[in-house]
Length: 76
Image 1 (cartoon, rainbow, N blue to C red):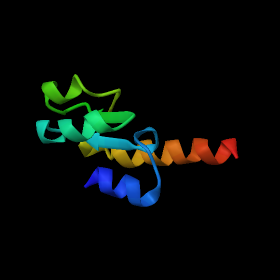
Image 2 (image 1 turned 60 degrees about the vertical axis):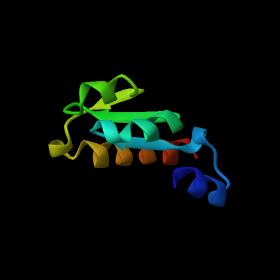
Image 3 (image 1 turned 45 degrees about the vertical axis):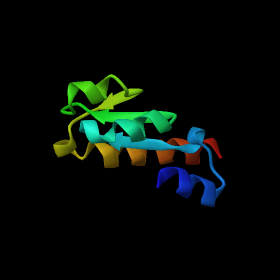
Image 4 (image 1 turned 180 degrees about the vertical axis):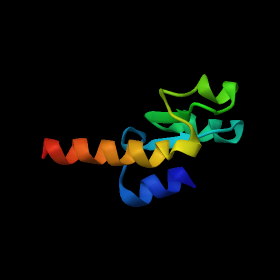
């Protein structure tokens, strides 16, 4: 599904950031240039992560996205 979406949008894996917390996310992590695991993620998933953020209970994904978008806007 992710490959199809990337193709439809004309994007590559280098444009893809994913977030996960369990082993079912490993295949998605393998596809992305940025694979972000929450701190309380399964250990096996963390091995595939390019970065780790706070827990899912701390709204860490939303905070990461807001911070990342703010940086992109500042670069414009």
